[in-house]
Amino acid sequence: MVFSVLDDCKALVLFSGGQDSTTCLGWALQNFTTVETIGFAYGQRHAVEMTCREPVRQAIRDINPVWHNRLAEDHVVDLSVLGALGDSALTKDIEIAMTAEGLPTTFVPGRNLAFLTFAAMVAYRRGAKHIVGGMCETDFSGYPDCRDDSVKAMQLALNIGMARQFVLHTPLMWIDKAATWNLAKDLGGQALVDIIINGTHTCYYGDRSTKHAWGFGCGTCPSCALRAQGFQKFSAGT
Ligand code: ZN
Image 1: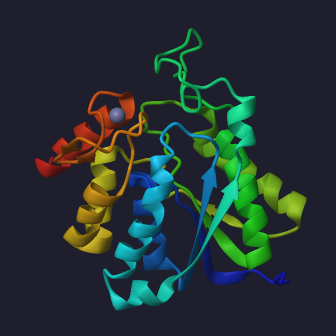
Image 2: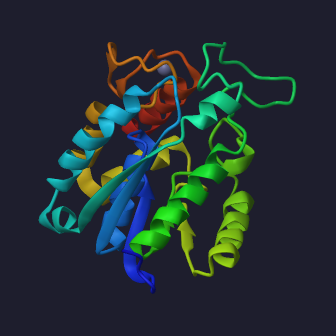
Image 3: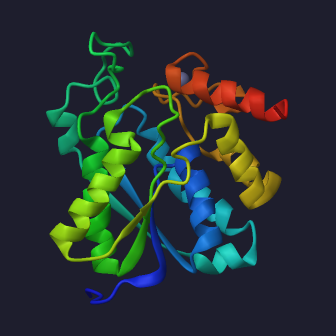
């Protein structure tokens, strides 16, 4: 069924099963009455994050009855073609390092542009006006497709190209990882913080065998380092 009018109370969250998108899910559950989620399988090395998604959805639903009623369908889109096209440390067994262009080898060109496009295709079909993503400029990586201008340009392109009035929300765009932990606490209290620590996945190498105060991960890859640093600052209350 295709909805002809977008529902202003309905949101679709790009939900990977990581810290940022789980915080975004909490933010959406606070702000919209119907919240659906979408995940992309793109041959990521840390495919374990995909298995975190459903348990996190279940746990977040139990935080309070309002969120329980608001959380709706989940959609998983197979974008394995991204892994075949890109030569990235995120999808291939190559070292995670900085390139001469100043971008990490984890950069998958156009990944977030593709995610937003596919999210809009699903939002169109589901009649959701709001699309929520965890893109962040403050992040260490400097991925150009996470920048505010990229997201705003995508909103314009999608609205013109699909003749819809989507609103793309990026609640983490200007905050750092410590503030992201704080936002989670504000939204869902310690229960949401605990879900993020125990249930979400961030490590680029997909390590879920080592548990730290901030959650599971190798502890040394750039993604783990950032999450650990943010948690430390958050715990210190600074
Ligand atoms: Zn790691």
